[in-house]
Length: 182
Image (cartoon, rainbow, N blue to C red; front, side, top):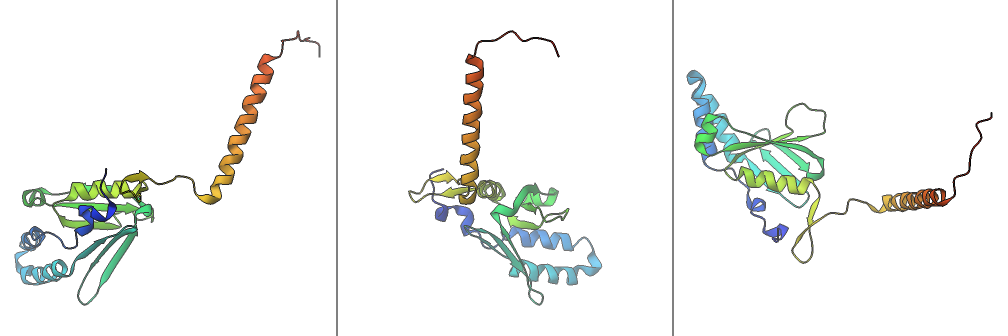
């Protein structure tokens, strides 16, 4: 990838696609007597739903009277699933379910109302694996060794070198006959 992180199309996604409102209406029609109540709740959810993708993580917020916001850092993401039922596929929508290691069996966050779900999934996989943008605009892998661990790695490399040298020294010695007397 040669694109800069700031230019990634996922970062510009803020609101769900209007097809999500259609999906909410169709879902509310299932229980016809409760349609006015369910449609009102769905309308407030749809019109207050906001997403924010940043360099550090994802934020999702919704609600009018009871505002709810979920923020997940990319480094906490464990798994990403795409789910869509028949109606969502017909509308071109898919839910991106994000799981973390929170001990919760379900998804920590569900991004819904996007037609660019494969682009979002690929972006999240790239970010959760530690890929960062360089100053030249290229995407480069983040270093896997942090500063405090560098000394340990160097010590392990030195030990491995010593073991290798000992193995070579022992292999080059002539084999002497050993007695089997105890």
